[in-house]
Every structure is written in structure tokens, then in C-alpha cells.
Length: 222
Length: 222
DNA sequence: CATCGTATGTGTACGCCGTAAGTAGAACAC
DNA sequence: GTGTTCTACTTACGGCGTACACATACGATG
Image 1 (cartoon, rainbow over the protein chains, first blue to last red):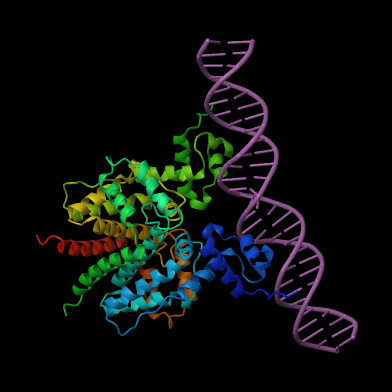
Image 2 (cartoon, rainbow over the protein chains, first blue to last red):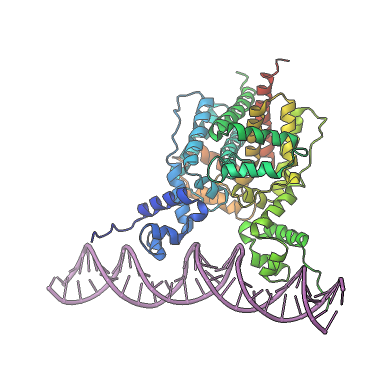
């Protein structure tokens, strides 16, 4: 009998991320995770301190996959690249934004926050003061998180996969177009043409950044 | 003995929203809700079909409190007013955006979606085509939801209440400012000056809308 | 080699959760 | 009266996170 590899934190987090990607946040339970590792639930506690620790761990892992933009770029492009990089990394693992938003995960390691630090640096380059940078950071983060959350199951989201299509048509069926003429027109359009969350996000990001640029222009009369 | 008022859907939803406001989303359980009504858990099922139904119900309730902007306003101001109205209604009941984002709630009634319909109408007024309006709607919704979610417990959120202050200072303690110079500077600032999520959101919204306006200007050479 | 402390995995149990199923009692129609 | 319907209650099931006690295996030490 091939003696099985001993457990360790790495392997637990690997399996947790994989399970969560496959089954969603509510499918990630200690018992199911243990089963996927061929082990009993309580064994996990020898390697992680509790479930929150697991969620922090996978969030950190995903944060650490966020590519950092080239600091030589103009600040707008750094902001754009940083936001896109966060969006892309998180959209590969939609469980993470969910866990962050619901406060089930709270990564505090420097490694996790580095992408954000880079973004703030670019905002300082642009001439924002502390409050301005804080607000711009919040705007970008909100757009990233909001886009991710709405594209996964949010109320007006473009849920393109799993229950997605069925979901949108359920909306259309239950909705009377007389009371919601504009919105139902949009929903019909999305049904005919599909929905591309990443492209939509990129477009939204560009609009926000153009607003940031306009504001930054008032700061340094150059 | 004063015979107690009989239960009904209204009273169940009232109590559910109140309990959720007080105890948060994870504090809203069928058993606790029943107890707050002086009743056993299973009795609730005579008036709502399950827990998802309750979450839909309270979401609809809060949606219906969103004020609709005056359609006579210029479109930018309609968009601004609609987004602010959503933000304000939801920030009084932070459970609702959470339930929406985690797909635990999925209101489909016309009443709930009216505020969104109005927003789309304003975007059509601005000259956006279907795809443009869809994207602009997504941008605004994402910003609203993202801001709400991050201000409640998000990873870089301005959690001003409950565990809030302690939380930010925990960050500061665990973080070494050498690796995160910019971000730690911002956190220090927020600790000294506090954080005002609503003002921050308004600022972010204005930046996004200025981006929307710029885009709309390219559509109608007017 | 034997021994022992530590690290790792297991079994059981507790108090939560949502809810299916069955039942008891009251209100009402006939 | 009898029957129907509606509401609330009781019990129970399978799931959750995890505390606690226990077993076993391993590496260092004698």
C-alpha cells in the first residue's frame, strides 16, 4: 500500500482552494475538505487553526497571484493594470471576493496587501493627497469587488455559467415589461447577445479612470 | 392573558429585518427569528416558504424604500440621485447587499427593480445604446454594491463601528510599513481622521459620473 | 536496542443550522 | 353534531464548526 503523503498546511490550502473553486463557498466545509484529502475533519486542525484561517490562507494565495504593474508606467496605466490584475486573479477564484465581502476572510499579511500598496503609490504619483488617494483607492476597490460580486450571482449580474442562463430567463418571464420597460429591454439584449463580464468591467474601469484623471488634473495645475 | 396577535408574512418580515439589522446576516436564523416572535421555528413556515423567501422579502422591502429621482432632472443628476438613493437605503440595512452578493436573496418583483429601471431610463436619455447602458448600469451598480460591502467588513474597508476601530489598528500593528509604505500611510491617516464611507462613496460616484458624461459626449456630437 | 515525548490522525459529542413530517387544537361552515 | 381548514408545536434528520479525549507513529535520547 502506498503510504499517503503526510498532510501539511500547503496541501490543506491547495485542496481547499480547489474544492471552493469547484463547489463554491458554501460547498467548502471542513468535513468535505477532509474527505477530499482522504482524512477525517478533525485532522485538519493539526495544520490550520480553524476555518477562518483556511479562508485567510486561500485569500492570501490568490492575492499573491495578482501581478504588480510596472512602476515605470504613467500612473493612470499603473492604476488600470493593478485593477485589472486584481480583477483577473479574483475572477479565477470567485470564492475569494465573496469571503472578503462577507468578512469570513481577513488577510492581513504584507504579501496580500502589496498589490494595493502599489496602487496607492500610483495615486500619490498622480498628485492625490492622503484623503484623495484613500477615496480613489476605495473607488477602484469598490468597482473591482462590486463587478466581481455582481457577475457571480448578483441581482442584475451577468451570470453566464451554471444556473446563469436559466436565471436571466426566469427574470424575463416574471417581469412585466410595462412596469420595467428600460430594464427589460436590457435583459432581452443580454439574452440575445450574451454577456461578457470582463469586458464590461474593463469598460467601467476606463470610465472611472477617466474621472480620476479629470480630478487629478485639478490638483496640479501643471 | 392577552392573546397574542396572530402571525402573518408582514410580521415575520418585519421581525426578520429588525433582527438582521441588529445581529447581522449570520445572526438571522429561523430559530432565533421565531424566538423573537415568541413562537417556534416551524411556525414560520406557515407564512413564508423558506429562509430564501424571507431574504427575498426583506430585500424587496428595502428596494421599495429607495427613492426614485425626479425624471425631469438632467440625466446625470438622475443617475447620481438614483445611485445615492440605493446607497442610502442599503446602508441602513447592510444585510441586504450582503445577501444579494452571496446570492442568498434574489428579488425579482417589479417593485424591487423599479429603481434600477429608472436608472436605465436616464442612461437611455443620455444617448447610450443598449450595450452602453448595460455597461454604465453595471458600473454604477458595482460601485454602489462594492462601496457598501467594503464599508461593512471588507478587507480595506472603513469599518467605523463595532469591531471597526480595533480592526484597523490590528492591521496597523501587524503590518510592517517598510513593505507597504503607501498603504500604511493611508491607514494611519484614517486612524487619525476617521472614515466617512458615505462621503467617500459620493466622491467616488462623482468621479464615475464624470467618466460617464465624458463617454456620453462622444455619442451625440450634439 | 528500548524508551519517551511530541506530532499527527481518529472518534465521539455538543450545540447550532434549515426544514420534512406528523399531530393537536381552534375557528368556521354546514 | 360533523367535517374542513388553518395555525402552531413536537420530533427528527442530516449537515455544520469544533472541543476534547484518545490512539498511533516517529525522532531523539538514553
